[in-house]
Length: 155
Image (cartoon, rainbow, N blue to C red; front, side):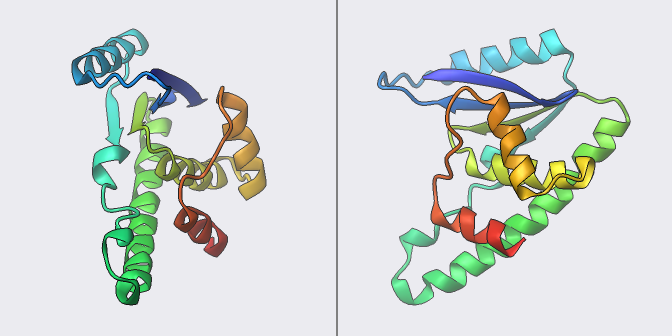
């Protein structure tokens, strides 16, 4: 497991876990590294995408008849959440607060958030946002589920 800290914009950082072949699950190590990073960068705001959006992509647990309804509900809930977080991040950004956005190893929601944020804050379109995000990552930008692509197509 590789812990990644990426500077998305000045004072806005993203943390996620890149899974490798070694399965190491030590939450104490992860928590300590996050605390050290926050102290080093003097970060005073945390956004826990991993906890706040745990509902995303849970439709697979249901039968096919109701999956589409659940996907639509998840998408609407996620869109509203993202719009609220973009407003919060912008407010923090303009008030010189440093923010760390934590998504653990599930990066789809963070990518959606950054696309919305870059569109709002930097007037970038979808393609420009993806290029910007990819330029900061050491791994290939991959959407882990098809519903993420569907949600972004509606944008």
